[in-house]
Image (cartoon, rainbow, N blue to C red; front, side, top):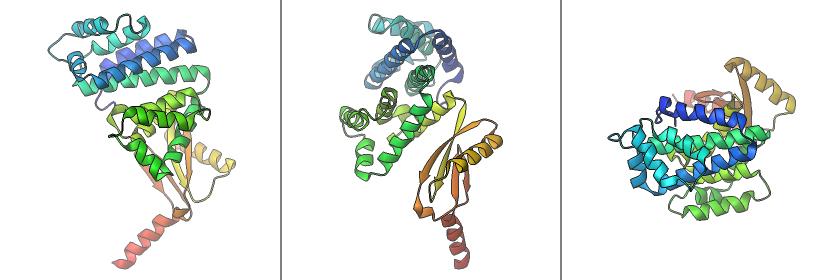
Length: 273
């Protein structure tokens, strides 16, 4: 997402958010996150407003003034000032500006969750929910169907996660259904998991094994990856008997594939030559 977002423009709003979150309580941070994400929803539905707020022919002050004229009295002052800082910068286009608003809202949400001490749980719940969805073709199809009304997909998520996950997990999963950052559901969920890990200064390692790892195995693997990447690593383990044996590990763009299925495929290819 940051490839499309003006880093300097977003950074000014992110710095202001960090300063706000450092002194605000959990409820206040959560309220600001909800308001920012509600504005992201408004911008997604209103392309004319989106274009006006990213119009390169207008000054940053004009953008902020327009935003205030639309939202004053509808959201709180904290959220309004954060958004005014965001839209007053230069954007490559309306889509990039919307991405920035969404990212700011998610960062606010994760900041509140972090303050509450629930960030690791939310990160794991998002991953497990993704596993549940990917393991059910009908459910995966329903949540990925962009032609289906968003309200229907959001309600499906609420029904599935009711009393089974933290409220923040459900809110973020709903954002994934809306297409966070212009992505599909699966990619949105993955990006949200990575942002949650980043908030904790962790990298995410997606690990595939044929059989469940023991706790000791997980600790050794996490320690080795932390040594390799110079930061703590959050393991997301998926058990897939189809790989037969070995381990596959993906961290960002890096893939370490030591699975038996890969070696067999390579041997088959070599024999066919």
